[in-house]
Image (cartoon, rainbow, N blue to C red; front, side, top):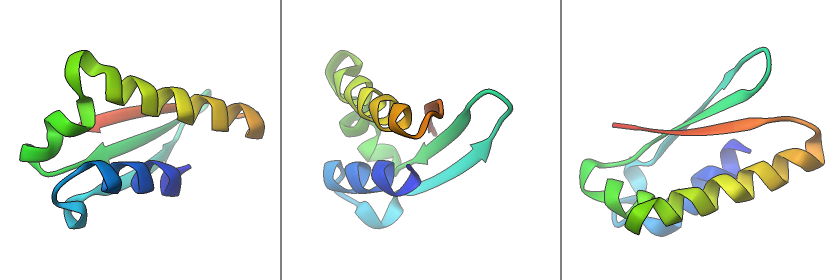
Length: 76
């Protein structure tokens, strides 16, 4: 899932070399942390959060296939 989020994020931003994705395993869910350059934060979040909501939906659908729960967090 980390690779999926990284691929999507890199295609959205102006500075793809600054995209960092990490996974943190939890008891109930796996948290995926996404870091981008500060000037690209708005592009990842989108107008009224629509873009990030769409990425989370894709991640959730892909997680269902693996019978796992994933949570996407965008960090500063």
